[in-house]
Image 1 (cartoon, rainbow, N blue to C red):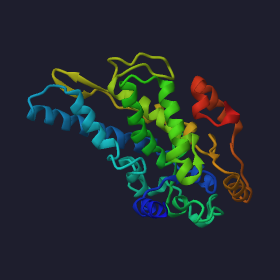
Image 2: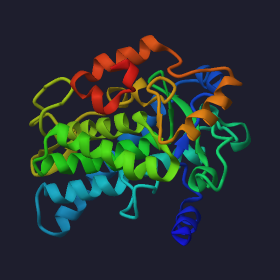
Image 3: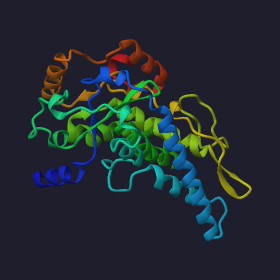
Image 4: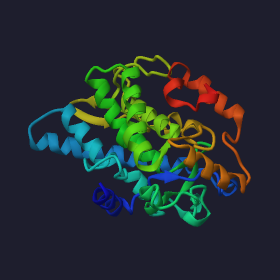
Length: 305
């Protein structure tokens, strides 16, 4: 087992898996909003996927192949099938500062709220970097949320296509977060991650025009951003990530749960020194509970449902 842990830490040491939404929150709040840059990136990737899909269809004598467009979108927005720990292209773009370093706030391990968690207790938490914090649509989110949105959101979307209900999908996601994605490796169960997963599913539904929007109950059939027109795929409009990024992804609003009393005690010790507690704004957390309504049991911090 210890060799497996060492292997995992070595392989993912370059990927940011968690975010500290508290230590430098005051700095992130006054940063410019990066929504326009995120939109520019995402819509550029969508247009590129459309162009590549049309080119591939021409080569193979096809017209508007759903398989082809899905594969090209996945290539542009989703990490390869090496595991959920692999960063999505947008997260890598942000982490490398290419979105603009002026938008980012980084936290050193020595000053983070996780600094009292010893290496031997949670090695992956200690050996992987933390996501930078940035403001998107007035929400303070870690870059890791975009890997959840695009990677796990795509997995959710495919499960929806295969006939699972929304509640079955998010129940699966909740269990996976508890057992694998967060709880087992880092001792952190992130409700913000779960919201990002859910919103990622909505993103792909709206992109391809599939199913019923679980938040608005709108029938999305035939309303996709990508449509088949005259035998060619076309991005008929820009997609706005403000429809998907909200304070449910902010771990300072939609608080984490921790898998042990030891974790809770030592994180609280660090947060008391800021000083700060979670949620940092109870009213905004309650607003998320209202927004996600029937799904809040699976997505939102317990005291805000």
